[in-house]
Length: 508
Ligand code: ATP
Image (cartoon, rainbow, N blue to C red; front, side, top):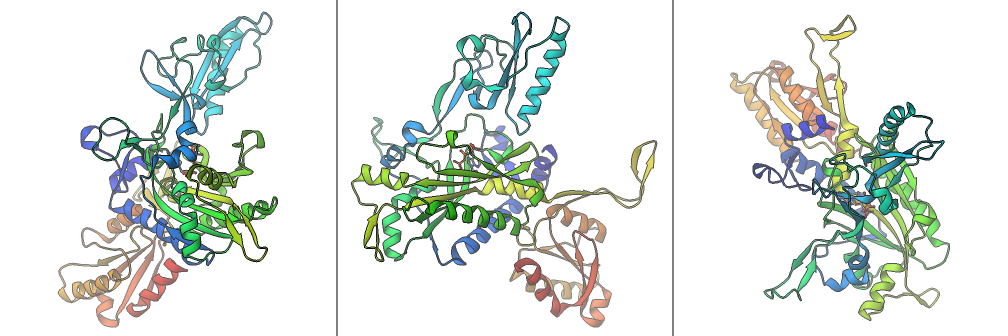
């Protein structure tokens, strides 16, 4: 992870927000290369989810809406995470992300203490390792009772007196868990008495539900159909962690797919959205061997939800949720119908029946997908001239190469143009002509500085799939070399063939 974060800063993908003021936890800024990737992700999603499907239309609803929306949706009362404080360090933790285990002697049951560990993708392994350490220490005093890992929401006051704080390691310094609402509050208008409180949306979904009738009627949409939205969401996360995986400001790409209220309709539609989402993620370059599915157990679902399956990804810190696909029944539309008094029913002309539609919700974070794509693409090459001496790998003559193997459609720069030398005006003119022509279609990069090998390395690290060199032969026969980032192979082709060649790679 450290390597990815360092690469992101070094090459201008992602910066810490407010860096000159020592940063601001949970917020990030996307630099010149990062903003291109984000835009590519969103454009591809919009193309494939909205434009290429005739059962889905788009929407761009406001970030701040009536606070009544969030009362009706249940967010004011229930969009919270359990929080504990460490009284000594004043640090706060999500209680469901701190795991602990009691360590006790088997024979007498005498409690020797407890271990605790913060959640990360490998939390269970970490906690187990910490517990094993304590076990070994305690083993000297006798056999040990088996250890159970629980999170802090399952700790009694007595447990809390022996569980060490993850911050200080001292037992008895954690408060009891309490609910912390994740919505950011703001005030709208000039009144200062608190009566004008409003919220920054914590998800884009509710803007879709509140516009259900507007969109359905104006688009004359027939069930099943979906409304898609891409936009910012804000959550005052207790512990924003793991770089852009969990931040306080992020972007979501969500669909609410409205289906019949038939009791069995959701199963097929839910599966279809899981399959569609999986294939789409593969199509933009996620490595399938890093992907997984996490089917939520029935007793852990919200009372209204029929099912929820996460598509997970093996991030550098462990396997975690990338996208959720939930079958939410008619809950949201029903809530808004009751709270607003406005009908949310759909009239089915075929059956002459009126009903509140059910919904399937695929919800994907742009920033999480960005991190997943970066993780998938990150690769280091060993130069072929590496030699081994006493077990150590020495790079003799060759260089270690860091490259980002992005799908060409995701890559922030599609192609770089290099004139071989800069002191030959005809050669420079040819290269400039090609660069201008390519810039009309793609984000291109122009580089005349340094040896060609160095220029290639810089582009490999930025994830640029193709580099074109204009050399002396170009002046003779109008051909150029196109070098492939992943294989490093170079093919010679007429300049006129370059655009069709790149188009095929980028657009398929
Ligand atoms: P988590 O359990 O990780 O907090 P969640 O289940 O609350 O996530 P959802 O409410 O289902 O997340 O949000 C849908 C998607 O939005 C997630 O799958 C994720 O991609 C993205 N997302 C949610 N919270 C964040 C965040 N704090 N930072 C970045 N992306 C997020």
